[in-house]
Image 1 (cartoon, rainbow, N blue to C red):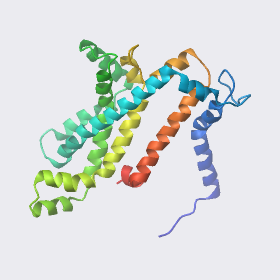
Image 2 (image 1 turned 90 degrees about the vertical axis):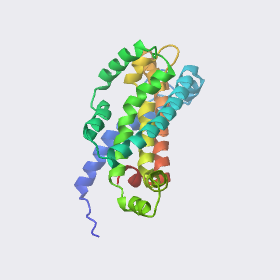
Image 3 (image 1 turned 45 degrees about the horizontal axis):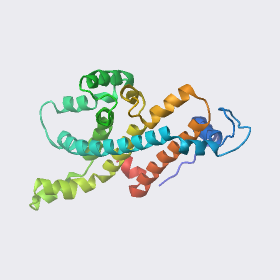
Image 4 (image 1 turned 180 degrees about the horizontal axis):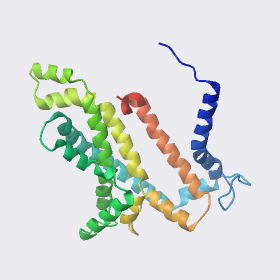
Amino acid sequence: MQIHKTSKPMGILVAVLFLYLLAPVILVFPISLSGDSVLRFPPTSWSLRWYEALFENRAMLGAFWTSLSLAAIVTVLSLVIAVPAAWVMVRMEFRGRDLLFNLFTAPLLLPTIVLGLAILIVFASFGLLATMQGLILAHLVITLPYALRILAVSLATQNMACEEAAKTLGAKPLTVFFRVTLPMLTPGIVAAAALCFLVSFDEVVITLFLTGPRISTLPVELYNYVYNTADPLVAAASVLLILLTLGVILVVERAMGLGRAFVK
């Protein structure tokens, strides 16, 4: 196999582009260690005071645990619904299949502010505003299309020979699904779970329409905090969120590799 070496000017250009894209993320780290009382770069002094302030902020901690539990619940529900739905869409032939698939994935095409307003109008009639149940249902609307599309692609690219061999040997449909299809679908499930978790945990626009004094998520709490205050506490929170995202990616990489999980 031939390996084509990248020219030096092209390598420099790629490095500059990566630096440009990552600069906002990189700058957050030194700002989070600032000892100043306002957002300033470069900091005039260094301190861990804003990490201490973050862990002493009960509103932020409560919002974090709400976001964490919300993302976990939404991820599990998305997989429970998307796995059989994707199997039906890919394995079964019926009239209107493509239309139904496009309908389920339509929320990906809508602006989040329009989707949030529509959810607000509907949920207000059912008393689901500022409730955990309402947040779960709203987040399912945006995570299900991601899970369904990833799992549908994973199923469509599977080798059918294994399933056909199991059926030929007398295995029942449920046995084939749980002992052949599902293990082969594991990389897609891991990829869908990681994406659903991150999308739900990071969602702010739609959540803004549904939260209130009784319940709030971390992105909404950070949004409100930045609106009223400009200090490095939000930078400290951002660093922890970046590390959380990297942790999820590392878990996927350790479990089966990013190549297998996200690319077939």
